[in-house]
Length: 429
Image (cartoon, rainbow, N blue to C red; front, top):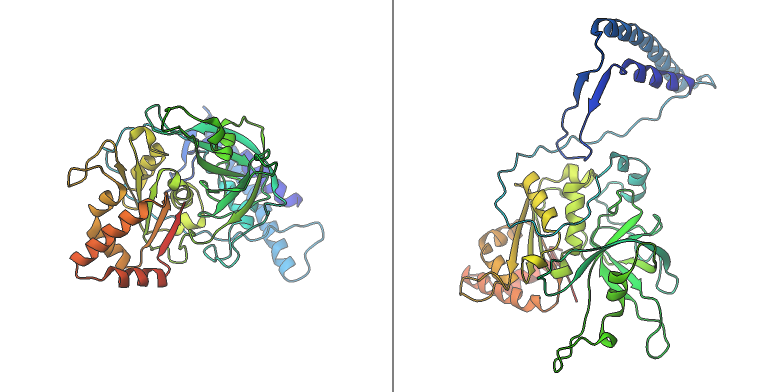
């Protein structure tokens, strides 16, 4: 152990005359380290460094001999040999993005830098081996009858003033005790009792963070919560007695508030990571975008095995009322700029855009604009996901059936094949 410490100390001393600068955020394509000379007496510094490097070489030679001796079973008791480090596949190169001409940035959300330390103990705890193996997906670590006592860290409003509803970004600390995977859901037990004196029923929310959480250390879980309000159709006034108990509790919660959580649950929305070339089509309305935030963070915004391996294309269709109702819009645009060939993003704004027939632009209308591409992707094994209000599915199914007929296909047969192949994923409410 003393040899290792000495070697590290010499490395630090040898580099003392230099300053290294690198980006805070991990990206797929690593930026080269920039080096600037920090000493005015370069010759003297160089000579001193050369001498120290000679000493370091001798020390490393001794360390190498110690390792060889340990391999032979005769390592001295006072000599430690570092454990081998698993090799990480090289990053996948991505081309530079063109100038962005998308919608203006109207939403902001907290996005913590993705630290490299997730390749340490946290990654060993949260990644399968191999990383795409889904045989050990965590489920029901905590049950509703015995929930985990979490703590709310922050509540941020995502929607603008002109949005028809309020949506909040709620981050909860679970202390690393409730691991989950992207695409799963979390049970929340609101405090208090109902009119009959019984505990409130559990509410299920799609998780909006990757397994590493927004903190990057696997200790938090994020929810995308729409505040449920009831307006009396006759008086036009809101009735607090009929407001959503859990959503209002979460949106009104202060940092430090206790919250009982259980789960995680669900496997239908898990990503197909075994083949990193698989295209992913994500269709969501409103807060149905939640699981896709976890997908995108894992594939593009965090330094994970899945991100380093992924070469397919992820395509997000988001349907909301207007621009102020767009959720995580800035995040999506950021990913488009960084990975223009691997991530696509299209929106349907029902109150601001018109479809080809001159009517309101709903999500199925936006999808129909790219029908040929979508069908080609599905024919080539792409997985398609749907999350949001169940009312969106009839319109989407009608559109797909209509397009299938125009191609001489029987949609019922194509739909059955997609389900049989595990390419069709639906979680609506």
